[in-house]
Amino acid sequence: MNLMTEAFDDLAAARRHHSAARWAQACERYAAADRVSPLSIEDRESWAEAAQIGGRISEAVDQLARCFEERLATGAIHEATRAAYWLWSAHAFARAEFAVGAGWVERAREAAGGEEFGWLLIPQAYRHFARSDWQAAEGLLHRATELGIGRGDVDLVTIATTMRGRATLKLGFLERGVALLDEAMSRILARSTSVRATSAMYCAAIGSCYEAHDVGRAAEWSVALDAWLSTVPSLTGVYYGNCRIYRAMLLRLRGEWRRSEEELEDACAGLAADAQLIVGHAWYELGEIRRLQGKAHATHAYERAVTSGHSGQPGLALLRWREGDLAAAESGIRRALAERTTTDERLTILPAAAEVAIACGGFEVAESCAGEIESALATYPTPALRAIADSTRGRLLLAQGSAEEALPRLRAASEAWRELGAPYEAAVAGLHLAEARRAVGDEEGAALELRACRATFEHLGARPDECASLKWPQLEP
Image (cartoon, rainbow, N blue to C red; front, top):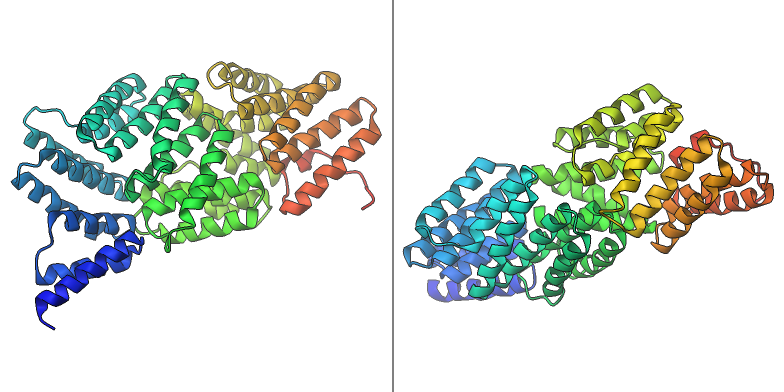
């Protein structure tokens, strides 16, 4: 067999592996073919995509750089800016090399000679994200969408629309923001986007919904994500790693904690090399699932999250509360809350801050937290945030001796979490509901509620933080 025949066979095999999402094999066969005869620009772009998705970041960067130069040499500026975008993405999101990534964007901008290209607007929008200038980011992403439509570039349109939806949510326009996310997801679900764009935007859309406390929509899309991931032979690399984190979050919400923990442990191991911005999130979520089960090494997971640049709060404060160190819990949560300035950032801390404040007898602090959560409902009027508001307010009323006022709020929270398919959260609200019923003299109702909560916790393998402050009655099996 001569060399050209071997190269042809290698290239055909590489294309088959690429179509089947066997990224490592695709890279190896593309490389073999390229050693005999230089690949076409289209095949080189496919090689770069396979390497990037498969977590072979150095290889991806090398091939993307060649794609950029080759596209530039032939005057294909739009395609060159696309290569520059993926180079920026590889450097920024996999390795936190922001300056290096920005350098490629600037090279592409110079080559554009003043002409506007949508792919170059997205990194610019991300810079506005970093400064919380959502209005400027939304405008840039709107323009990028228009340019993508003009070019017939589905990936560009989908990425820009997804990130525009996130910016719109940050501006406080829930209905408009989720409509944009829905529009982008319709393209993803129709398999109109590349694998690279699909994995990245699945996670961006789901993450945006979690930030807006639209848990129902996030769960729905996570189910679709799970179905898509089940078709992939190997889930290595930063792109799949981020998807796996969100799949694990769905599993935890739904009560499949063993699968969630296994997914996160694998993700943490697989993301160790080239995913500095993502592995911290994986470690934090692993700390959460371990804390909820009362397992050892929860602290280790939170510490690894912090080492990787992710906050360890509020999980670490809740862990210290469970351990009986209220001083550490209070100081940690107070510092974390002081560092958060935007509504969605503070909402990740406020419920835990209220719980810790109540445990410390700081009712004024808890009142402030409850009021801030309730005010956020004007921006994010979602069932999940309403449940959080009801639970927080009900818990505070109960601690202040107003059990009758607490009852309807705690019952509403329990029912809402049950409707959202979140058994742990429903049972935690049920614990406080049982305490309120006992306080008003309904011992039978309290016992029934506690039995239901205990059954849920035992099924999940949970050790809820709130159990430390609630005496369990001796119930018959």
